[in-house]
Amino acid sequence: MSLLVVGSVAFDAIETPFGKTDKIVGGAASYIALCSSYFTKSVNLVAVVGDDFPNEFISHLNNNGVNTDGLQIKAGEKSFFWSGKYHNDMNSRDTLVTELNVLADFDPIIPASYQNCEYLMLGNLTPKIQQTVIERLTNRPKLIVMDTMNFWMEIAMDDLKETLKMVDVLTINDEEARQLSGEYSLVKAAAKIQTMGPKYLIIKKGEHGALLFHGKDMFYAPALPLEEVFDPTGAGDTFAGGFIGYLAKTGDLSFDNMKNAVIYGSAMASFCVERFGTERLVDLSEAELNARIAEFKKLSNFSI
Amino acid sequence: MSLLVVGSVAFDAIETPFGKTDKIVGGAASYIALCSSYFTKSVNLVAVVGDDFPNEFISHLNNNGVNTDGLQIKAGEKSFFWSGKYHNDMNSRDTLVTELNVLADFDPIIPASYQNCEYLMLGNLTPKIQQTVIERLTNRPKLIVMDTMNFWMEIAMDDLKETLKMVDVLTINDEEARQLSGEYSLVKAAAKIQTMGPKYLIIKKGEHGALLFHGKDMFYAPALPLEEVFDPTGAGDTFAGGFIGYLAKTGDLSFDNMKNAVIYGSAMASFCVERFGTERLVDLSEAELNARIAEFKKLSNFSI
Image (cartoon, rainbow over all chains, first blue to last red; front, side):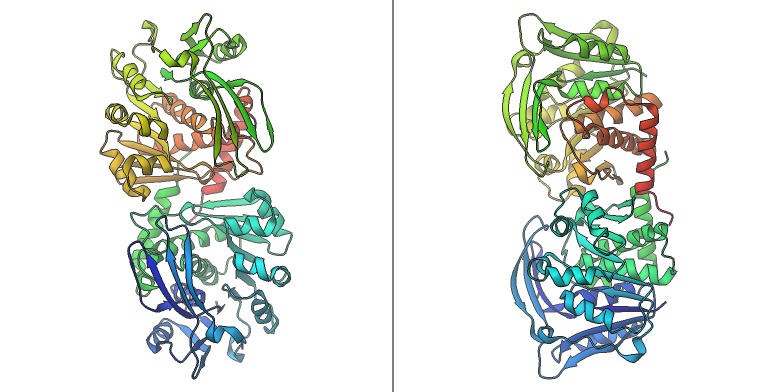
C-alpha cells in the first residue's frame, strides 16, 4: 500500500573511531525511503536537493520502486550538509558542520500523483514543514508517523506541539521523551505524550532497544548486540523505514502487528550500523533480512 | 534441589529522591536468600553479622525455608553497614559510609550439613573469600554462580581472575564487563570473559534489561518499564536470587531454561525496586509473581 516519505536528502561527512568519510549520501528521507523499499514498491518521496546531488543515488531509489517525482532539484544550489564526529562510546557525537543550503527555504510540494497515500512518514524536519505536509494532503492518511528531535523542542516547541496533535505515531529517543514530557520515568513520559496527540509512542534507546507504548500496552524490542557498531548515523531513520514499510506492506495496524513492525525496524537498524552511511542498506538480500529476523527471535523468545 | 548462598548480611541506610531510611536490612546474601526461597525450600546461608542484627529477619528467613546454621553471629561486634545516596536519575549513587565491622575478618565456615549442595551462589564479597568457599566444599556443586563488582577489579584483579577460573556463571553490569575485558563491545567483552573461566555470562543493564551469553548464544531479557523506581538497592542481588532459585527448582541447566531463569530474575528485580530495601520481597504472593511473569511475556513476545 502506498507510502509517502518526507524528509531530508542530503550529504553527510562522518568520523567514527573506525575511520572517516568524505561527503556521502545521508538525510533522514534517504534512509527511510531506501529501507521501506524493501517492504513495499509504492514509496513516494518528497524532499529537496541541490544540483550537486548524485544521480546514481536517485536512480538507485527509482530502481527499487521509489517514486522521486516529488524530489525537487534546485539548479545552482547546494544540498543540505551535515558533518559530525562520534565519541569513542558511539553514544554521543559532536556536530562539526551544519549547512542548511536548499533546506533553508524548503517548500514541500506534494505531486498530484502522491495524493491518497495511505501511509505518511514524516522524517525529522522543522515541525512547521511537517505540519504543512499534512495540511496539503487532500485525504488524511490511514497512519501518520512522525520523527523529531530535541533541537525542535528547544527552538520550536509551540510548533512541535501543534504538529503532534495531527499525528498517530511519534518516534523519539529516551532523552527526548523525557525532555518533551518533563517526566523522568519513561512509563509516565509515554502516558503524557499520548495526551499530546500521538496514540502510539516509540522510544528509541539505541543499543538498548526500543519501546512501543499504546494506552496501557507496552512492548520492548531488543537491539541486536553487535561485535562492532561501525557508524550509528541513520539508525533511527532506518528503524522508522523498516517500521512504516512493514506496516504499509501488511496493512495491519493492530498492536500485535505494530510489535512485528518494531522488530523489522530494529533488524534494519542493526544492518545500518554495520557500515558507514547507507552503504549496508543498498543491496540487502531477502535471505539476509530473514536470517536477521531469526536472530531477533532467538534473542528474545523464551518458553515460560 | 539444595542451594548454598554466601555473601553479606548487613545494614543499609538509603537515600533516594523519594525519601530516606534509617538502618534497614541489606546485604547481597539477604536479598539472594530471601528471593531464592520463593523457588526452593532448601536454601543454606553462610554469612556473618554482629549481635546488633535483628532476630526478626533471621526468623523470617527460617520461616521461609532458609537454613541459617551457617550464619555466624559475633557477640559484641557490629554488622557491616553501608550508606548511600542515589542521584535523581537513579542510575548512579554516592557511597556515604562503609563500615566493614564483622566483614573485615570474615571466615566463611561451611557447616557439615551444607556439604553436597548442588547449587552455589557467591554474592559480592572479596574474591579471596569466594575462592575459599569453593575450596572448602567436598564436592564441586553442579553450578557455581558468582557476582562481583568493579571495586575488586581495581584492588584485587589477580585474586578475581583466579576465582573466575573456578565458576560457571558470572553476573556483572555492563560497565564492569567492559572494565574486566578491556572491550567496549559487549559481544566482544562476553567472548573474552568466557575465556577467563565462566562459560556463561550475565550482563545486567538495570532499566535496560539483562543479557545472557554462552558461546555464540545470546538472550536479551527486557526490564519491565516502571512508573517509578523507588530504590534500586539490591536489584542485582534479587535478580541473582531469582535466577539461581529458578535453576535450583527446575534442575535444568540447558540454555533455554537459563533464559527462563533470567526472566524470573528480572521479574523478582522488578518487585525489589518498588520499595526501599527488602520491603517488597518479604511477602510476595505466588499470584503476584505469576502476574508479573505474564507481564514480561506480553512485553517481549511477538508473532513473526
